[in-house]
Image 1: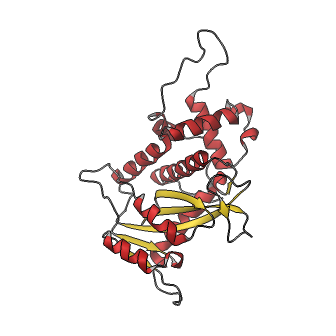
Image 2: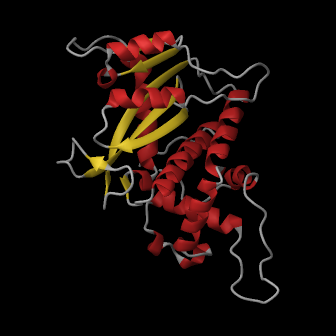
Image 3: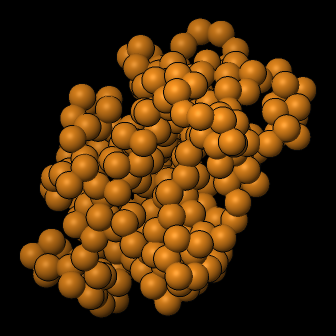
Length: 272
């Protein structure tokens, strides 16, 4: 699984987008300010280990609640989305991004206590759950990740994922606005979806319901299953504990960034 120790290189990428730090101690004294590096280290630890905020070890330098507040504040400032965009640009420059073809798939996780955007899970006796829909490139790089209630049909999540296709900078030329091909399994089968994708200039490669297996599309689609296993290797993503939609979205963007970082570093053994 991923190490629980924050890599210095990852913090350097994040630090570029963080607000300036105030003085460690104010002119009137008070509790010392917790540095950004310490807060990011705790956030990384919680993401990787899946521990509760209350169980964060004191030796990490700050309480889980302090890190929770920073995670929320930085999500509201768009920090995690910008970090993800930076990493996609680095992958593109390194020749590790192939976004002409994209693959879509989803995974449902339990949402203990419900929360914003949760829904009754069709695979878990209608207990509250959240569905994560991933859009990955041909190598499994997570380009976009969307969340919705577990009861949302796959085909309704196809277009939000495709339209979240990022305009990745990093090399000369105009960034690509949409992929050329979209691969998906039978859960996304819809003639209307195929027609709309073709209208957008995207060739749909979607398996059809009722037809026998052996279409050959799995030779391309398998990478999204691997990326889902990497996502769940980050233990905080296996079960949703946070009720807030802001925190849910922060974890989603951060998890995609961590996977991109490990692909860039050629260290992608994330599945526990």
